Length: 341
Image (cartoon, rainbow, N blue to C red):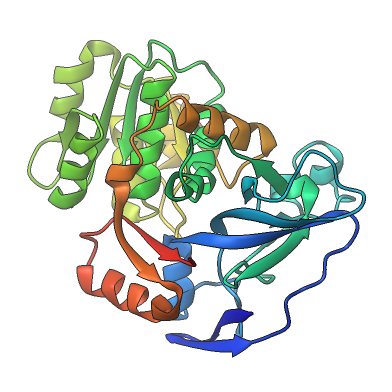
């Protein structure tokens, strides 16, 4: 089979390797789709702080079951599946208290351990989730980022039904956070970005309240759309100084700010305002199995618009062209898929 290996920043080699044998507790997935995310781009540029080379990428994936281990039940050949790309130790404090997604020794497939950028991928069955036939391969490969959005929403610590939600950042994750909150019954959802392309994409998926903070006053827009109650929950989905500053500045006293974006540079946070306004500042990293299950439920029910978020497809042998295209787009692009079929 063919495997794609990023041997150094900006360089991918394709190697012919043996088709892997599976253990009794594993399944073998024939990979059909791989989504490219922002963290993958960091690896491509050589700036991901926790990834070395060579590395086999691929963590937003979908495929079909090719083989099933002798000790595995619940899966059959031909099942459409996705998987959770976390590798946890099982013995640290977080793992022992149900927080395996923030394991002290956490590894993520495609970064600190091998991912699924290959024709066939062996993986423990406990990490695999079967998908309804109604979910396409494209949508199946979106379950991982949807799960990020579901988990972030759960991290807000309250039912979002009837709440006013502000999402800072309209990239793939921000868009999905906004869609998930809307699907779960939020009263109003406003999303911001400095990219008019991403704001237009947000409107295409039904997010009507959009704002470019470089062109409009965010505080006034919040007052206009949410009234004196302002935003009940704010999601920071960019990971830059400007958005975390905006979030804290416009937060209502006693509201919640969930940090979803990955910060490349350490931000300066006005903890004086956090203290004075009794803001809840909460981090959100990855996801747990219930997040995947809810993501699948929402996707299967048609409560999320996903096809509109996929900008381009590239065949597996043009993996590197996908990165070149994303780089050339300078932010004016959403989800790019790698196809293996």
